[in-house]
Each structure stands twice: as structure tokens, then as C-alpha cells.
Length: 185
Image 1 (cartoon, rainbow, N blue to C red):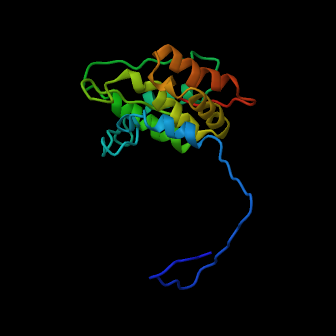
Image 2 (tube, rainbow, N blue to C red):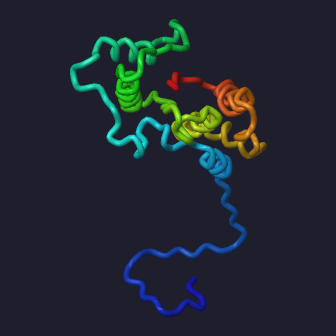
């Protein structure tokens, strides 16, 4: 096990030496690695770059947050897209950061991307779908397989047009789910 090893000491532990023709393949690692190279980590809701994240103060904006949470976790009979708009500095990011935290605690946050005008990565929509797909793959085992397979089959997908990225990294993997559960992006 430690053939030709010199200059070290081992104290305690359990050691298992396996030999033979054992091949362990963890499918999807290459695909996740490909996506990780294109991910805008700074755009994630819990990014270290935006720490401390803007959040709503306790007991503020409760009606809006409750309405958004109900919409996000509802039965799917309402609209699939919800648009939050307002002038700069009106608290849109704080509201969405707070909502993301609540959704993650409820285990139904699929992913998030917080844009920031003029930022190198957060201001670049070209990495939006790779970033969202990466988060979906981390949160959902079945999606991990489909998304990873898509990235492994064609690693150039992360450099393709946004329509291709959306279709190949998010729409097609989501359509392949056997038992789809609501995930919020």
C-alpha cells in the first residue's frame, strides 16, 4: 500500500487497499465542472461578494414577501413568471434576497441570478443560463444527470447563443424529469 514511501509517520486510522480492475465512474462530474467554469458565482443570492446581502428588516414588507412566497410555492395555477419592478434603490434586491433565503429554507429554490449593471460577470447575461443550470444540478439529483450529460455531450454549449443554452441546459433537462417538483428560479 505504501510502497517506496519514506520520510513520514502514520498514527492511527484505518487503511484499506483495494486492487484489481475496479473502475468507479461518477457520471456527471465532468459536466458539472464544465458548467462551473462558466458560472457567475458573484451573481448567486448567497455570494460572498455581496456579503452582507441586502435583506428586508424583520417584520417589514411582509405582505409583499408573503405574496411572492405563496406565488412561488403555490400549486402552479397562477402565472409562471412574476415581474418585480421599481426604481433603483427601492429594495427589489433586498426583497428577492429575503425571498431566496425563505425558498432555500423550504428546499424549493432552484437557483437565482442577481444582475448588477456594469459588473463584469453579474452584468453579463451570457452566463445566466449556465449559472442557473449549475444551481439546478446541485439542488436536484435527477436534473444533475440530465444537465451534466448535456454539458458533457457538447461542452461548447456554454458559449452558444442564449436560446440554445436555455433549451439545452434548462428546458430539455426539466422536460426529462420523471416526477417534476416545483423549483423556483
